[in-house]
Length: 107
Image (cartoon, rainbow, N blue to C red; front, top):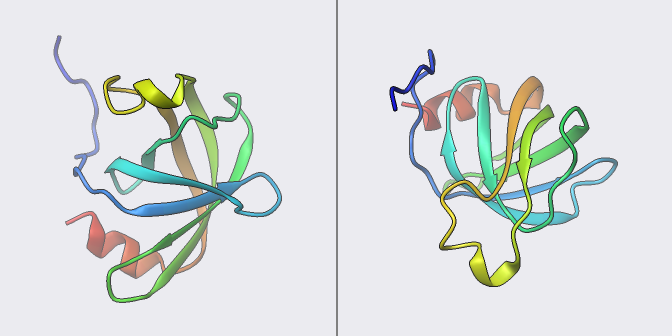
């Protein structure tokens, strides 16, 4: 199948905290792009929900953003590593802080 994505994706594993009101759930990114991220986690939200995201870089910089869930695939915790697209894809709507640091991660 041909990949029709317009934005380049970069495989990165970064710890991400996320949640609807407070970023209290923990997941890891599997890939990131300038416009969104794929979060691997067995706790997912329904498509259309707005989530708050917090990523911490290896330099200790905390990136805070708001995004909308575009797709979600719930899998049992024991299958999380075996299923390619498990978790959810989140489109970033706006950054509260750390936009420049996030864009550095995408290159």
